[in-house]
View 1 (tube, helix red, strand yellow):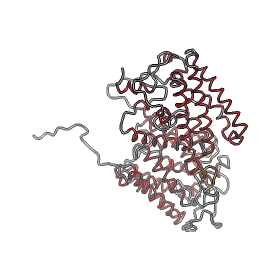
View 2 (cartoon, rainbow over the protein chains, first blue to last red):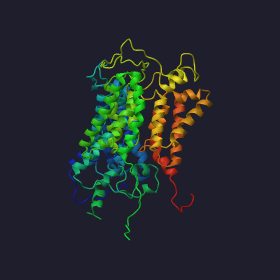
View 3 (tube, rainbow over the protein chains, first blue to last red):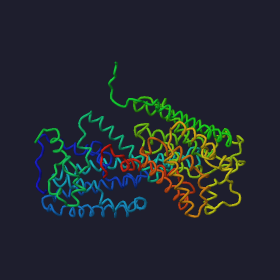
View 4 (tube, helix red, strand yellow):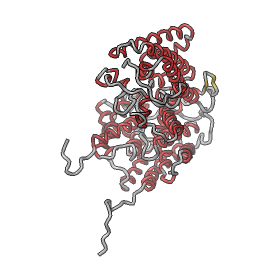
Length: 262
Length: 323
């Protein structure tokens, strides 16, 4: 696991590591990771933005450190090691938010410490940063973080506009207007509605962008880079037999699928 | 001799979707007439708003999604009618439009249209409204037969309107027993009490049910098990079971919402199971819950379980052994 994997021959440009997280491998809309905070804290744009930025910082830093330590961490205890690294950065974020943004801290509540166990961060550490040099890992963390923030803000925007009649706290439907906002949107069911509809929309958009090319690899969950391995994140956490088989990284899996390299 | 060779089925019924939908609309007419008589033009106004907005949303949705137009199958009309029947008479007129949008766009067309929806569209619309606007969705007026606020577009209720608790609310307050001042059984049967547009008159609904049974559009398995479980549960909890049957939305829900082809099981034992589940949840909400009425939640909940009910009740093919 700790050994660096062979690179595919036609290495994609580094910019791709950033852009893939935004739509093609968007953590929330395409990989369906980190759903819990995406449903729980997205009642307003402000909360979504706060959560997204906090997660991006943790992603970026955790990816960097995991990548630097990738040859030192023994493969058998890598998950606990990743968690320790991640939780260290989450503690930093938590303290900063407590000190400088007490209101945000109040409304995000338990979800800030819970960034530690956010699937996306552990997932990127496991399938990307632990096999790549620091620079691409940082770019990957940044791209995924931006993708996560974009997803949270878009869910938050729809929910805030429909549910409270406001954007970023600016009320454009007054409370005693004739038509009042749809309260269900800021309640949990509304989160599921918006999430489901946006996932369908992102799927459609992504299909259109890829212009009919195979989307097979993104249909799997993030850890399952090909169809024979189960999700590395879920299957790998239990450290069953699957953890021993080294999964291919996403780039290689793509080539494998297309039959470029065997 | 001229023998024609073809694959089965060889005998086909003339029943198709528009014919079934037309039958359901005909069956709903008596309840519609009673609600217009009891609540005045206001009822007609709400019904026309929900039906027309449902048709418009159905048309627009199919157009945008570049699919065949499906208005002629009349399912949007039924959704609109049933949605209106589950709304209180004094609701501001823009709310039914949101209800129609939820029903047609979110609950039906986004899932693929008629036959693909997971939950009953009209009930989804009703539930979204009742969670979003709890005050308006629970303000009932006594049917007067006069067109009091028929063309009022004001969200503020007129002061001369008589608001009155529904029989179920009174039952809820009275710990399940009939108390003084509550409508008697005859009032409940003909619809002289507060309630949603379509649910008030049990007699009118039953006329429609008899028509549907005669046309073999619905079967009695789900409705009877649904109603029986609610009544048994009520009796066991020391409530008045007949009052539970005659008040609230139990009858319209059991015969018109819980017999929807798409969202309920196809197998006979599945239908019974579905009815029992609905009855249990509805009775639990009515008797122990924080709301007086819960049939809409019960049906939507069981709608979600329908694929699983069908999986466990699927009949074995000929020659197949027991599991």
